Structure formats: C-alpha cells, structure tokens
Image (tube, rainbow, N blue to C red; front, side):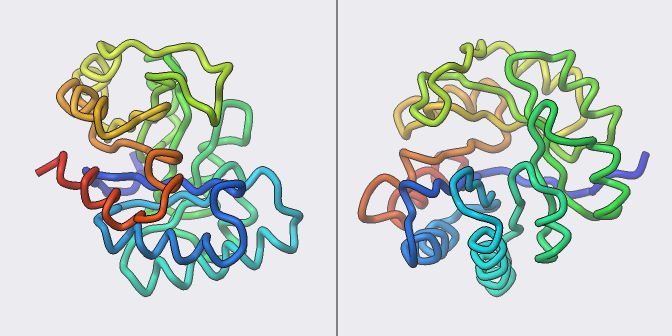
Length: 210
C-alpha cells in the first residue's frame, strides 16, 4: 500500500487564528519548533483566501527552513499551492485517497477519527499516514466534541500500524497519561500558544517523550 513512511513521536503544534494574530503566528510557530515540536498544522477558520495563502506560504518557508513538516488543515488545494508536507482532513472534509493521489506517496496525510476505531480503520484503508483521536479532555477549540476514552489509544496501537495522535484539551498535566496509553503524538493548541513563552512550553511537552 502506498503511504508515507513518515513516523514521528512528540509534540504536534496546531495553530489558532485568534491566539496567533498577525506576526505572532510566525514568531510562535518558530518558537514551538525550536522548543521541540516535530509537526506543525496550519489551522485557520477565520482568514479570507488571500490571507490564508500568504500565511501558509510564509509558514511553509519557515517550517522548511527549520526542518519541520507543515500540514494544512482541511484544504488540499492550499496544501498543493504552497508545497506543504501534507494535509489533515476531518470527517467529510475531502477524500483521503484523493489527497494521497494529489500529494504523492511521501506526503503526510492525517485523518480525524473522533472516538471511533472504525473510522481509523477506514482511514488506514484510504492510505492515511496517521490517525487522530479526541477530544480526550474538554477543549475550548471544540467544546461540543464527545469525549474519547484513553483505552482507544492502546486499542488503536494494537489494531493499526500507524502513528496515533491524541488531541483535545491537552495540558502538561494530562499529557503523560495519553503518552502512556499509546499516543505517538500529542496535538496541542491552547496549552502551547496561549502564553508568552511558547518555546519553553514546547520544550516541556517535548520532554515528556524522553
């Protein structure tokens, strides 16, 4: 099966347009990578198309310079346009197979699976590079999300030969339990970017994996 051989473990930084306005977006992403983030996702539900293209292009240049893959959230065309390392697709936000066909065998393609191992099996069959489960804790980003059980991480690790991502309300206090349960990556938004010293926070998250 054609699928990216990419495999990583650590902090997965996801941007937020409200937390990171203007130039702070680039400063904070650079700080997160220098602190130890192994993957960055550009997630922007607010920007107009022109703004999103400019931001994605600048982030791609930054991430490429620092040697960290950049994924685009829910926008295959934008990922193609800026030459991103891949894309993350939610349920109903496009075909994983189409993304693989367009981006190629080396692209990193992530799939939102909520709290469903069946969704994860489908994503694997459709050539996803990783599967993401959540929300594990209450999250201001998606307050309506149903909680996912910790056991889902270990079940997915046993059933699937793919990296497993945990997302949703993750902090430095609750992240160790997710890692112990089987999460290869922890996706963090607020607990990483909602504060002044992003690099220090990133380092503290990254150190949980060592």
